[in-house]
Image 1 (cartoon, rainbow, N blue to C red):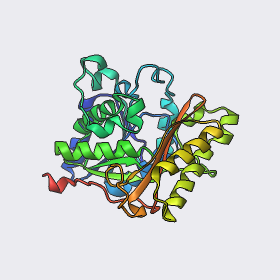
Image 2 (image 1 turned 60 degrees about the vertical axis):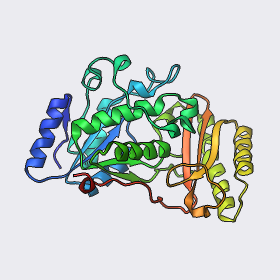
Image 3 (image 1 turned 45 degrees about the horizontal axis):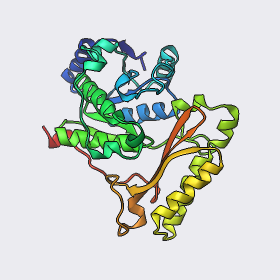
Image 4 (image 1 turned 45 degrees about the vertical axis):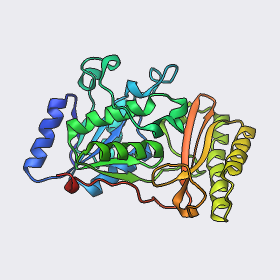
Length: 302
């Protein structure tokens, strides 16, 4: 496969997509903040199976970082990222915009997408405005690339659910496809922020996956006291040196709080923790497979 073309302006990105569409080709979009890893490559591979052409974006979005978070320190590894995408051979174009291409009036004065109440729960409770920032940049990228398919990862599950909600609510003609969480051999979910872990922290990090697995096994065995399960998992993580933000059992379809009448296979267990300088998130579906969620297909909005 030829080297992916690197595009820096919205006009060039739109021109490229117009050329593809003129020859009847479909387009998939994989948004990233760079510092790519095996998880991103798996999403690019999934995108290749879903569309004729694949666009990956690399943009560290300031509006999804809160005060005191790691926007300035977030790893920027463009040369390595481009080499990785080139070697993978699954991407046709890489959109690497300057800030002014995404926020022409500046990030502080940008029009923002206001997300519903779910955006202020779970990760949103400790990261106010985070999901508004995510939605605002994804909406812009969709407007520029106008893809048929948007490919996101299951690891950022709350983000996935909220973006699906935005797509449905705003009538954006794109089909959302999700790829599985990629893990290290010891179970740790692969993440760009794992590089913040010291050697000692990295050795302890798989305890997060282990704690979630214990909750999943208990739910499969019929446990119904979600609060007790959540507290036990948080206590276990605290004892392993983590600072838990939350461990919660939610409905997989929409992340609503379960009322106790849902069968276990309709539930998902989610967690966010601090370990040293790294904020780690993870989730496991009780039934062990991707649940049915809102899926808005282009044909339903054309």
